[in-house]
Image 1 (cartoon, rainbow, N blue to C red):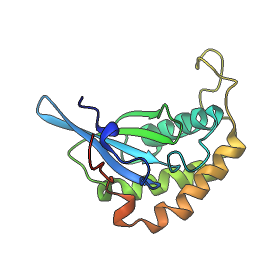
Image 2 (tube, one colour):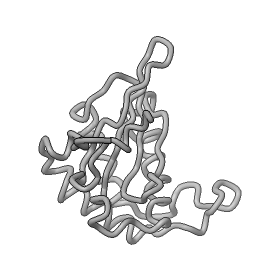
Image 3 (cartoon, rainbow, N blue to C red):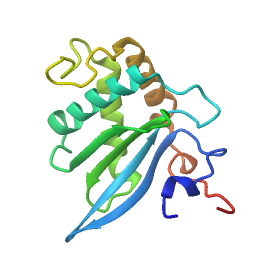
Image 4 (cartoon, rainbow, N blue to C red):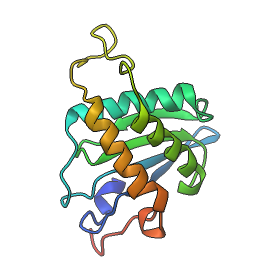
Length: 162
């Protein structure tokens, strides 16, 4: 079974940003980042309304408001509700995107106003959003994790056996 996340020791995984995988596509590479906002099985997962709001805000930030708009392929929630996946064009490492992630989380922490595309004609579940809690979660992740990244927040703990 070649599913990267199944080989990660989730019992030791910390909050942070990890390179989940790199895929060769034509002449280029796509790098998938695991933006892990909660420690799996040790911290309460995020509500779907928060994950949904982060998805909208982060997608808008990376596709419209950052220097990464031409490299952004995908922003979406993890099914386990402990974080987000972000896919960028390029053969990248965490250090390459850390500053952009800090700016994205600062943007979300301070966002005010109407959540982008939270309308029935633009979103399949437009009522499932929570900006207040999203701002809190993004601030916690920014100030507790992104501003204090260490090797342990950037390198997956591997399982001894699979």
